[in-house]
Image (cartoon, rainbow, N blue to C red; front, side):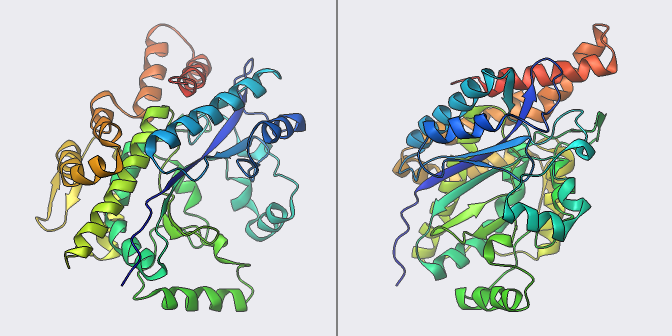
Length: 378
């Protein structure tokens, strides 16, 4: 008999640090920024990232979505205030519209030094930011079972969060270009499927024994059993520019896991489709975001994204009510209607060009919009 999950929630976000004058990322930000943020937060809530132009924050272990929203808003506000003293600002988007990875420096920390030595140019290209959502699932076997089933929903979560249409000054044509960069790393992409926690541990031990990885934190799947906490960690999403969008995606993640657990208690399971099919929806989410729909594998047809999202929200309504996040879950329905961060970035660029801006000026206008939108709702 499995222990009922706590369904606690934690949200991690990574931000680009941007110079307010040049609008470019800052490859060598003052070390005082990290030090002051660490002083103003609880231990472990603020940390450096692989590249020095990035900073990561993480909420406490929260028992409600409202608590997670308050803590994430506090952390965003703190980074805004501290960086502002140095003429900088955090930018909540997965890629910067025109920054170049070749000019970045990695953080001088043994973990990152080792990663840079191992991955070489792949590590130097990691000028990307993401959002991770941890949901408390304390039982090891249940964590693996829910991971197997939740994989089906990962493309939908990605589509709601897209914020990386630009790369090095160009429109990539994708709503989430970030994953094309990250997928070059080994041990990324959709998670493997396991029959038990023991099987998962066995495969991890093979890689550890061979010296390929130090521990399971070097497995970077879109969804993974956290190596540090008794959680499932959803990692596929881009970094949501709007705070409300980040909270909605986190709430939906928590409620889908609750729904899958509830079905399990009724001796039902979500149908697990072959990875090749789920991967196709992952690609569609990267390419189109919420615009072109995802494949319904049972019907073998493409279904409009809004139809799929409305169906999912209806499926988890009881779970949202029980977990106290109905408003946050239903707010996800607004994202396809008004567009994701990727849509807003592209529209800002287009409007600037129409109004007579040059290409470079239009890209700087996108950065300005992202800096302002990062602070919305704080």
